[in-house]
Length: 173
Image 1 (cartoon, rainbow, N blue to C red):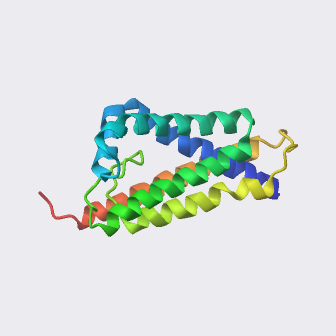
Image 2 (image 1 turned 30 degrees about the vertical axis):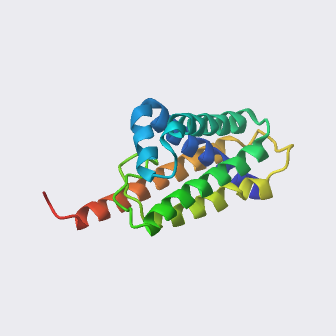
């Protein structure tokens, strides 16, 4: 049973990073703007770092889907989520909450909720490392794939509910 949980989480990570990478890659100029808004990098590094983030997210997906170096991919995913959380937290601490996070999906302003979300996701990403071995049978893949789709839908729903709650508190224009 724990293997099924690990596989479901791994598929969720694939979907999460596929969504994030596609969001960044499909509107790369907008993503670069988000990176600039964080004010953590000198201007000459914005394009190469932005491109590197997209490449790393795609590499995580490829490594997990292929099964090659899947543990390393999960550690990389957790590290990237923590890095994003640190960047968000740093800006929130500086009072820079009006920045769009660039996380993918509906617009979200920076908040400690996003920092907590990234910390929880980073911990969740490591579940397969503890629950799977390298010889996990592939015959049970249908159940975890369905569960991972459910997890992604729940994640998207949570994000939309959170964004709606924030939008409801904003004064109307």
